[in-house]
Image 1 (tube, helix red, strand yellow):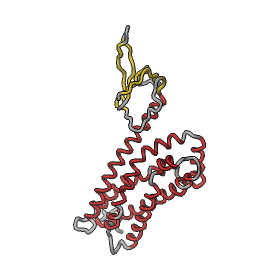
Image 2 (spheres, helix red, strand yellow):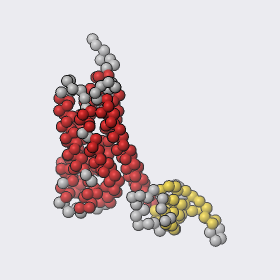
Image 3 (cartoon, helix red, strand yellow):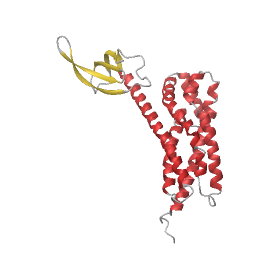
Length: 272
């Protein structure tokens, strides 16, 4: 009986990675189809979004779907003849020029997330999204919108694995290397987009805890909380403990401590 746990050869490892690229692309394209067919297109005429909101929320997801359907078709055709032509470099080469679509999508993503959070506060909008999800048995729109953001890091990981199991003498080695560099550039942009989204969510949570003289929109897109903490403020008669919030463009201070659930803001100072 052969050992079921024998170490796979380099070629076998490479075949496995190629199959994973194909299978994950199938799943990804299906998710994009759900996003475009059941959310993006119906909401163009639903009356729940104006043109600017629709463009901000969905970005160029419909264009990304077109490109990835073509890429999936190319993957399917190549895998069908994998035994005689085990290369993906020429297929991936066609993806590189279109990575700019992902750059555009990622640049807009934190604006889309911010808008979605605001829209979800409206009962009619949330009810419509829940109805779409339940009727078609698909993922919620938030889970689908983030998929292009998640796909680029996945491409990066898969290409790194494919390159690892590709001999330097293989015709695929250089094309895969070039595709990996291009994907890494977009991955850097995505990391920045994710950082902005996390910061925005942090500001929205903080906004709920503040009362008093708080700016109307504390969770502005480009605002970052740099530091917070307790300081002693010298008043006319006595020194008093005050809690400060330092942002890139604002300084807030008021009553409370680090463990306080709420802070009453006494003063908001614009730093510019």
